Image (cartoon, rainbow, N blue to C red):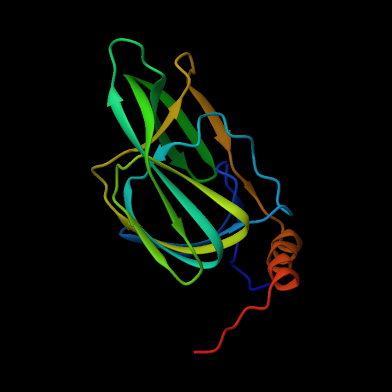
Length: 185
């Protein structure tokens, strides 16, 4: 494996392989496969990024679930947590914002298709079988990262774990064994 490539097991259930990181843009490959164990998710899978996302589905099928999140003084279903990432550690801090959350739209994105997502838009991603995407993030510093958790969820940390080179190769190999990828121009 090339020196400098360091995959990370993401709590949202995928392997993240950073390709480029700068102050303004990030490029990563996301791999969903049964061969990789990710840290347990402590919140709901519904979250909002601090960056505009452009995602191209390299392989498989990705479902992007878009949610309507509204402030709710009466009968809230979730608490909004601010997420601050420092290296491999996510610090999740509950905010005072209580909300309701309802799925508004579901997009199904097949291989060789692109989808866009604006910073601050609550969503969740699911896949059917193995899938891979390449994600380009246009950093928008004014919008924090958020996740939705249960009403009583307190401040806590989630540690992402690096993926050993062998595990990354096994994950990549799972795609080769399952499907013939046509890499012709």
